[in-house]
Length: 160
Image (cartoon, rainbow, N blue to C red):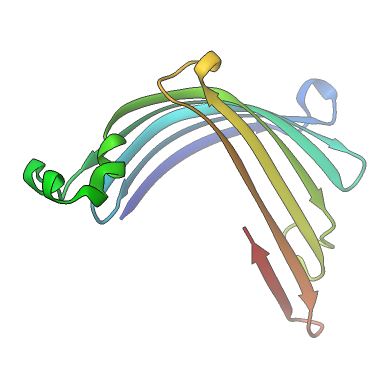
């Protein structure tokens, strides 16, 4: 099961400019089959729209994470080498760092799209020089295509 709490405060027109500023806090707990994951943290983001369709964002994330196994005894771990990657991640981790994102949005309606597409991508660098126990980079992205079928129905495809 998953328990998630989050609070986000956004100023959509920060300092009277077309820049949105967001401050977010989160606390999550995820119960997977063989391990538990608990994370708490926050982020600060600035997002700016350029023209009507394109926007970019700059964010900073700070997170503390704890990963612990619930189904594996030490004897089982020694007898099952395929568990080694999971055992290496067990413990308490902190991470901090910046990320840069972009969005290209050609939907006809933001809340209830009927046609168009939305493309989103993000690159983050965490740990190392930016603080924390981990050091890694992360790239994420997705795209959604909306195709009108009839006047009141829409077919959508989501790629991640």
